[in-house]
Length: 339
Image 1: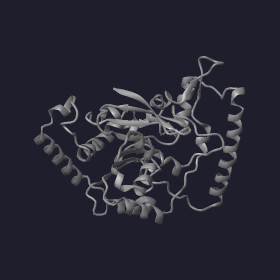
Image 2: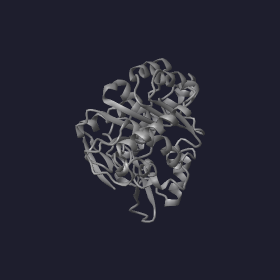
Image 3: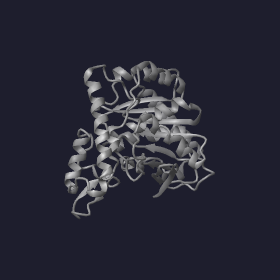
Image 4: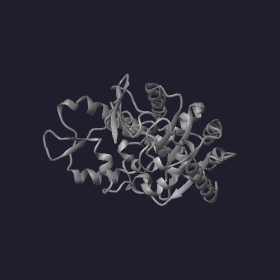
């Protein structure tokens, strides 16, 4: 069960979908670049049903408003969405679960305001690593700037004509290709239903409704030294990282030092590598849930007096809860990361 929500913002609104319990502070789930909250469709039903999950569409994505004309998107600016959501609901603390861009946002925000974060789940990402210095990187940056300006002009003329439209089957293939086959056409439907609009000219075709400027956003790459200093500010926070084995987005050679700092004297740090691509949480949701569920149970256990629980959680006595946590701790010791 879920309820669609809208969070006011000066440029419009942030769309969201609140699953489950609405009487307690939920987990805030943030999707990746060019995705939307549908990325969590297969994972949400597997999570503990005593705690709610608020999934949001980032500005320019899904059904959220686009930012004003003449502006550009940036990773650092996106991080401000987290305290904005907290302010909307009056939260003093936040529990974060982020994939890709959402995981980067979680890392940045937690390093800036560690006292407001009680746990982080990061899916196949940690931080935006710096590419090796080269003329090619500068050329790509110049091309992005030029393409951003072209997209602005296209949007200014948008009232004159529709964007290119496609059949639903073609959209599934386009999305798969755009994700470097991280999302197969089989699972593309989870990401399409919030980011396409039916064509007025060709009723059997659709076009992408997300903000085209998002494709050229500012990544704000971090140096290793800065990333490690940010990790020191996070200190001993509960931090779970899941990496897809076929993904390039969590390069251990560049992230190993930062991850080591996160895990230093931190019994609440966990790292697992699972078979899969960058969207491992989508196509291997069950396998991810094997590690996410006990992590949530341990760091956000049910408050039995605050909500009428349903499902398996109604059967958890205090003794059973303690037994479940002991099993979790035993498995954590057996599966401790080598990093």
